[in-house]
Amino acid sequence: MTAESDLRVLLSNLRPEPHPGRYVYATAPEGALPDAVTPVVTVRESEGLTLVLPEAEAAAAGLPYTYVAGWITLRVHSALEAVGLTAAVSLALTDAGISCNVVAGFHHDHLFVPYGRTGEAVAVLERLAGESRTA
Image (cartoon, rainbow, N blue to C red; front, side, top):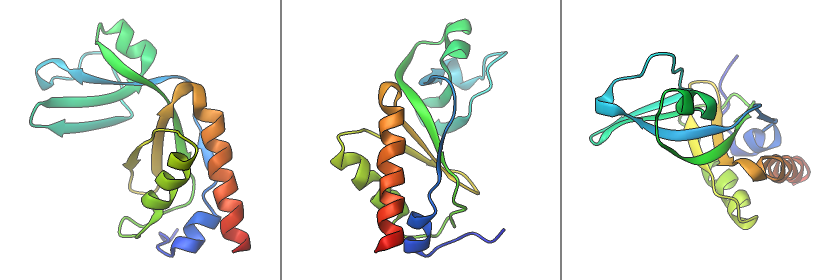
């Protein structure tokens, strides 16, 4: 599958897919990944290793965490060099008053939004996609 870079095509084909469960942000003590922890995102920063992982795993590992989030995958296969997708998605969610943390994967973009607003965020993204198809 070829990665898409045309913004209108990307927005028209967002297909936001929520994942079940609650996801949290935590840091690994001394940069070591605890046993039985399988994060969906890791980011190595100078201050330590950031983890985004299921809340139950963080709690079981005794990791303090913040920001309980819902995870939404944009099923459109976006090119890493595509311009404007993150901005357009962020603006739509901003207009709805929904915070969003975006992580780009090789094939898809992943959004972490406040857990209690996941359904609303999906609706906002579906509306954005619909508007892009008719524009």
